[in-house]
Image 1 (cartoon, rainbow, N blue to C red):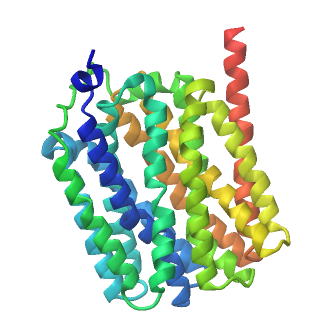
Image 2: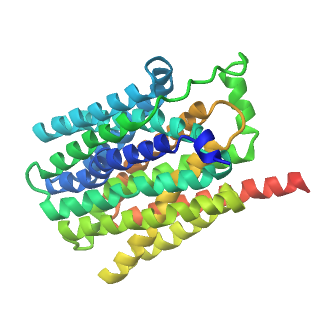
Image 3: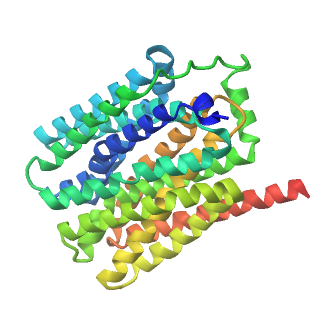
Length: 391
């Protein structure tokens, strides 16, 4: 029986995964991970870097919000093309201007990433086998986790001076158009099941434990990821680490994210999203405490590698929660969880940057450790409530 051929469009699944892998290098690897290092080399302080990192996530919010509406009217393929063009324009603008206009470029880059996120991922997950969706999300997140490896590695090879970084971002972003052309027509968007209203649907979603886990993970996970990616260059500088070594560490961070996403998806499939997120939160807190203490460069490399896998897993787990929630449409669920994650990410660099300015650069790790412990306590509480309700 050719079930995979008759029920699942593997060509489109492969094409969409390739689109994400290529676009993520320019839209996230360059814009979110390496560009803050380049900006630190231009002399920006913790507050300014925090503002730029927040501008990326703040710009992502309207992209996430309008993407479902645009997909209904234009189709997911056109929305993805629009998202790629936004990122290219943003990179060109940042390359040709200076502070504070970089904030506008950051917001536009974030807007482009938000559009692609919602334009592509619900399309991909709707055509995937439901019984292996957690693993597919993990595999997809593994592919896009290549971006924080590839972008820093290329930046280290070609240097952070001149326009090389912006060429890298533009080429990878536009290259995503090639596999997009191979994807077959996306399935029609399903009509809403009822006319009860958004607030009623949200109330039903919040009754589901998996959605509650997703909300908790998104609200704290985004804060941790954005603070780390936006301000890590200043933490490294405070440790006496050079710009070239910083890009190497960021590549290690991305490698950790690459290797852990599929196991996290497997764990979520077999033990639940809450258990997987609890282990990641505890691990994040422990590693960040270690990074806030004096240690040699080799130990820093190992700790950053572990932290990359743990921090990146929060987005994977939040998306798994959104795609396995029974209430509401998948597009609206992914959009809502993504917006919560992004709202948290806007606040993360601002809070951590202010704390770093008030104390020292190691405060970045203490801040992330504290946030991870809060998430661990919230998840443990939700799991205890679930066990009580089943008793």
